[in-house]
Amino acid sequence: MEAQIIKFTVADMSCGACVARIRGALKQVSLPSEVEVDIDLAQHQVILTKGANPATAKLVREAIEAAGYTAVVNDSGPTAQSASGVGDCGPAPDGTQV
Image 1 (cartoon, rainbow, N blue to C red):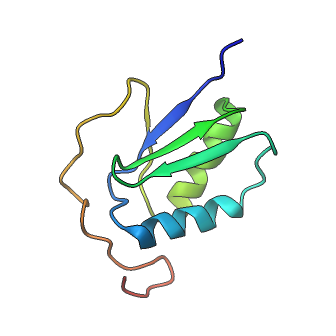
Image 2 (image 1 turned 90 degrees about the horizontal axis):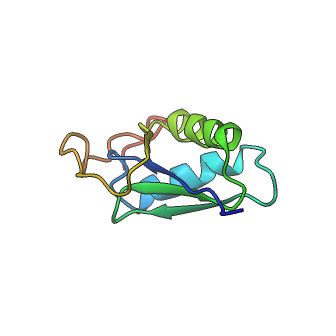
């Protein structure tokens, strides 16, 4: 059986601090141990591999959104980036400016 990969486009993830916030949010989620999550800042993507399924995808999406970002499931590979939000890190969820 081929492993399922689920990609999320996170257009408003624009810097290393954004990646760190998303990683921190994902650490707060109880994902099955076989699940792997990769973050590709250059492509503005969070990629769910190994053990990806609709339930784990929902948990990952909720964690990304709880960190203050917009996660859109990308079923057809990389998409064109939206200009809105890209490059504007804005305040962290705790109100501090990045």
